[in-house]
Image (tube, rainbow, N blue to C red; front, side, top):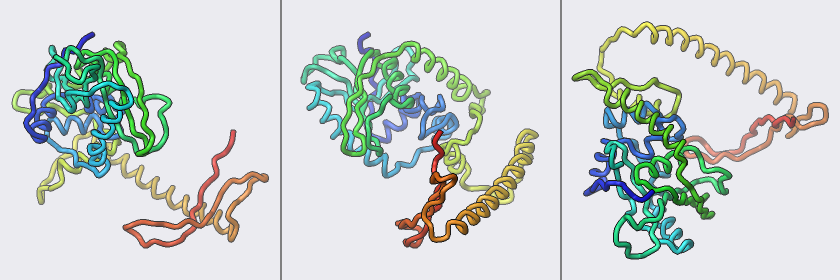
Length: 309
């Protein structure tokens, strides 16, 4: 297939953020499908419906600063040219389906049109060193959504691992995966982004235990109304009872954990390693703690040795 994306012009980063929020972008899709480390179905809903902006972390800031370096290295290594960097595009038939492409690949430095682009480029930076055996699900889904949006069939996912290992991964269109993604996202959009009654906000998806969900709930209702009272629904009242039991069990287990650890430490005494049937089973070694929020210093950390099967 050839390029068919429709460019959405943006005048500034704020304008880009607003126009991106109006659609469902490639980075939203992994959250909707529940495979993103950074977003969840609930946090995507909150971003679109309640305009909850994600705070930019230091890691995100450095990632953005490294984008140009990684893209330039790709051009030097492959001999290809990247144009249309950070372009916001929409699917020609589904304008709500959008993607911000890191670049389109060209064989010419001066292409005549986007129809000359031969592939899609997506750049990443990872804190951990080491080549991926397989492209992580969240990135695979992101690029497949970009293929669908732009019309391309092939491209490259490029990653700078650990700040010092540059890797280029070939990636191709998977139409079966694209069909599944589009069906799931379309269902989500119908239920949670356009499915509200007249004058009402569309209902949220089920809450989960994702850190993004925890954070966005805290952001949405950060300022309680003094003295406000609400009757909890029956199912939430039941959850509250279960929560009390869970907290009591956690407290009991934490107490039991400390007791068992103290028994092991008392048996180890000055020893660093404890054996069971001649095999190392536990270590209690001295480490040095360097933290900004607590006093630095030496202490001993108890670690269980993984059993070999």
